[in-house]
Image (cartoon, rainbow, N blue to C red; front, top):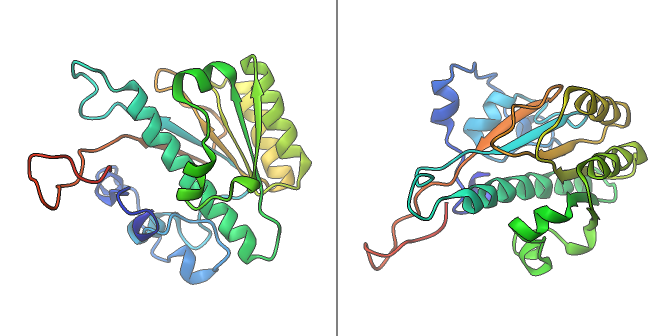
Length: 227
């Protein structure tokens, strides 16, 4: 996310601690239309092909350093993961436009997710660099309806990507989504619950947590930019 999203940091030391081999070639150097993060240390691990544009990518909130605090941290962990998802979506939309194609994405979520976490907000999307006119919203009553909408969006073959919120994803629907994404070369971003196991048949999995605010430029006792 690097310079394209000030305040949100991708920590390459976490990847190094897990012993992932660097593939050495940055995606943006190989192909300007490639979908990557724009953070050189992370893109080195992705390699010249960047993120798979024909697979499912799971993003899971990870309890942050204040998760056990008096006020808890559930909502802020989800917010950090949602911001990460939307910034990945923005970079996918930009890559689509650079390839000379129309950029649009489908957002699918059950109604209870909006009540608990908040709805997508058009001025907020614009601040992240996403044109609200590029976003189509589907609100469902149940999880199976959300999965159906995501699957149909992938099958349309006319979208830059499909994104959605599902608490958990069983093996069979996970494989169905992966097959649809691969067949129509439309990536899928899924925001899943931290309480659920990792989804199967995914091209990548991301655990996202919040960090302490950056130092305030004028008052060391006050919180600075969100990270």
